[in-house]
Every structure is written in structure tokens, then in C-alpha cells.
Length: 386
Image: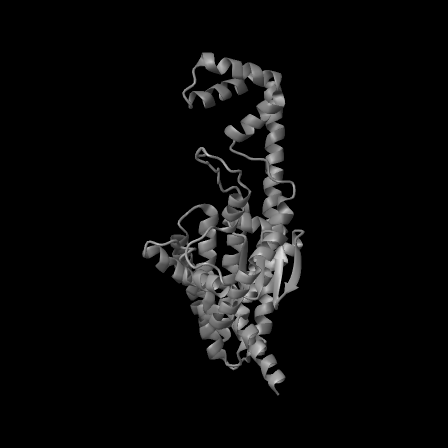
């Protein structure tokens, strides 16, 4: 009897944390698809390598918990942080789908009180105490590792300057396109059908069909757009290569005009033109970038763009549909779906802000308001025609 009760409690905990776990499973799928690895430890799925390692480097963490999924920079980070992250897993089991927004609220409150948004976050302090660690601000994992391996010195080291420029604009653009549509369209469909005589099972079936069709259509659109960009670049490069040979004086005049815009005079420009005449390939590359403003696309950009948009659409679409899979009442499922969708928009905006270098909370609020308005408009239209 006690064993059956314990099993039932575990099922309830997994179900309560399911919305957050779905986000983690999507990240885990991307990790496996990009050459990463996965493993099961202490009732949670752990992923490292591939997407997880890239995500960890960009955001700056050793390990991150999303429901019953833990993402790690590498296997060593997972081993070092496992006890701490398991404490977060237990937190998610208590807070359910409210964990992510509550975590960000705790970060905001810590920051407003003059503390550190991470070290002084209540959830992080609770996790440290659950692991028996010393309470109070500490080093992030990368800083701790650096402190351990740093050589001893009696002289102060010169200030360190890290170049942290964001260079994944195309990837984030694809994620934004796929995720925003995925969060909005399936939500509008499911919400529009709520309140009719249609059962939850049919709503879920219709929603999943829409997610499948929408991801294929969006992915195909991204593929064709990337292929068009590559073809346009190739055509312009061939034209520029012919002009460098056929009308070199005209092209030299265009180069001079570009550098004159940067304040260089004719005497300073002349050796640059002489160097370009000896290296026509470099001349063509220069004209492509500075005259036409075109960068050579990644050869695998079309496939990557299609997979990113389609995958983001699927992840976004499953979030508003998940309550309909968990609840029998369509009214209750709609209420939870609204909350989960708004939370997902907030988290999505926060992460986007961290990637692009803008203020994370401002980006989160902006994405929530704009995405919520779009979802509300789509919901209203769907209800009118349902």
C-alpha cells in the first residue's frame, strides 16, 4: 500500500512539473540533434554537449534545471553541480509551472534590494542550504574553476577584458520567428475551440495537427528564404568579379569613395588600391561587404534555419497545448494555458534579452506584452469564427 502511494506521489510530482519539463525536453532534443549526449540520474534526464554546451557558454552557467531535465556545459559540470541542481528539481516539484516566473521574480527582488540577481536569489540560496553549502554569495562555477587553477602570484594581475559580442543573430531570429508563432497560433486554435461541445481529446488532436502542419510550413519557408539569400549572394559575387576585371577604374573609384567616407585621403587610399589590384579575390570580397552590404551565407544555413524554425514552432506550440493534455475540464485547461503561455513568453523574452545584450527584464516584459496582445487578438478572432 505504501509503495503504491509513493508511486502515485511521484506521478503527481512529475505531472505538476510537466510544463517546465517540456521546455527542458525540447532543449534536450536539440542537444541530441546537435551531437550532444543524454543520461538519466536520480530521477532526472541530464544532457550535455551540442546545443546544451553552446547555450551554457552563451548564457554563462555550469548547469541549469528545467523541470526534470538538467542541462550541463559538459559531463564534469553535471557531476559537480548535480546535488545543487537536484535541489532545484525538488523546487520545481513544489512550484510546478509557476517555478520559472517565480524564479525571475526572486531575481528581480534580489536586484531591487541591492543584491545579486543570481547569488541572492531565494531559490539559489535555498538550493545551497539544501546541499549543505555555505550560505551567502559565492563564485559561479566557471569563476570557481578559474580560481582553483590560477597560479599563485604576489603581484596584482592586470584587468581582464573579455570580448563578449553576440554573433548568433540569425539563429535567434529563427528562434523568435518559430517560437512566437508556435506560442500564438496553437493557443488561439485551442482557446477558440474551448467552450464548445468539443472534448479535450479532439482539441489536443486538432492542436497537434496544427503544430505538425505549422512547423513544416514554417520550416519550409525558412529553408526557401535561406536558399534565396545564398543564390542572391552568389549572383552578386559573380557580377562583382566581372566588374573588377572589366571596369577596374570604376571599381577603384567606388573603393576610394568608401574610404573617403572614413576620412582617408587619396595618398592613404592609393596603397590599398594597389594591394587590391594584386589580390582581386580580396577586392571582390571587400566590395561585397562594404559596397553591397552582403555577407556570405553559411553553406548549411538553409537546413539549419529550417530545423531551428520548425523545432522552435513545435516547442512553442506544445506549451499552450500541454494543459489540455493534463486536465479534463476545458475551462480549467484554458485558464492554465493562458498562465503557462504568458510565463513562456516572459522566459523567452528574458533569454532573448540575455543573448542579444539588451536588458533581460525589459525584453521579457516587452515580449510578454506584445506576444500576449497577439495571442489575445488571435484568440478573439478564433472565438468569433468558432
